View 1 (cartoon, helix red, strand yellow):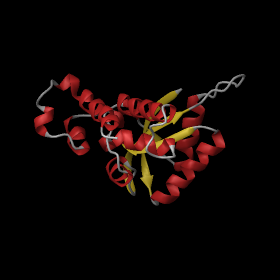
View 2 (view 1 turned 120 degrees about the horizontal axis):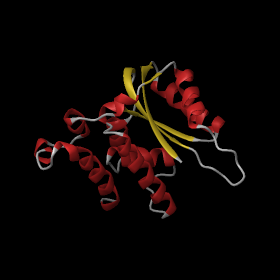
View 3 (view 1 turned 180 degrees about the horizontal axis):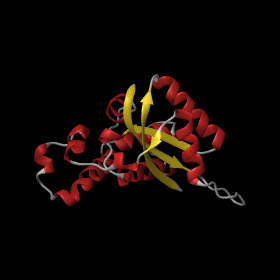
Length: 174
């Protein structure tokens, strides 16, 4: 099961933040990845990236050995990790964040409530939940690297499709 949520807060040390986030993932037996929400165009953006990454592992076409990194590649629409991290990775300072949370349910396992895990993540970093940071607009598309020419080809109601197309193209450029 996959869920996406937004937050706002301050990251003083990116490496420490990522290390602590990985620790939470291991402790809670979940997968959680964070992104710069300034380049995320809605929850469908991250849901699609996550599903593509999971499929890549299932089909053994993954480019990395880590589902977390594979999700970043798809979310950024890139095949190179350093480009993807520069594009969608979290930065130092006050910012808006987008998170993907994946809970793998095993047989006879009680369901893990998303909200409890989300609350734990938010408390750990002193972040405030804010799903509005996931709402994309024309500026989000430009920050993602979509050109004005591409944007002009579709109505505003279909802007999210431009991001989904970039995600799907990652499979083609492998």
